[in-house]
Length: 199
Image 1 (tube, rainbow, N blue to C red):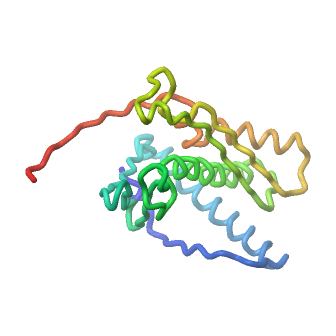
Image 2 (image 1 turned 135 degrees about the vertical axis):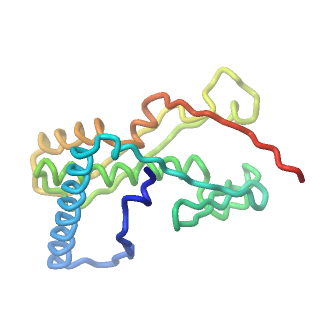
């Protein structure tokens, strides 16, 4: 099953410059309604047919410019590039920055989901991710180091009225259930097949 088979609603994201207390309460109530609806729907779907939880995500990409890519995920398009020091045109975030961004955005989703499920009030979430990468492997100068991040640090700043213990309970739940954090923490089998088309 692909994710597009399970979704019909569209969402518009806007950047808020100022939010009133009433807007915050409205958005929190709307978020709670959406979380309840999604949790109920997925719970019923999985209870009725366990294999319905198996999702396949597909993203396609095409090389453009020096080293950039244009990517399509469902109906969304975005670009990924490198800075000039890595032969790019610096038109978009780099692949490793996008990977950190995926980790941050997944953390936000799972913090919201489990805050709601555990009854822990979270008014706001800010996440910073830092990753250390040794470029010597990328450029073939040291095969003894990892090509990817050697260390990743997440700083999650939560705003809300709960105790430190409750937020620690939330962190533990998020750490146990965040799909992208799992990708960073555990080996994932990857199969690569190269197809050569006539030029």
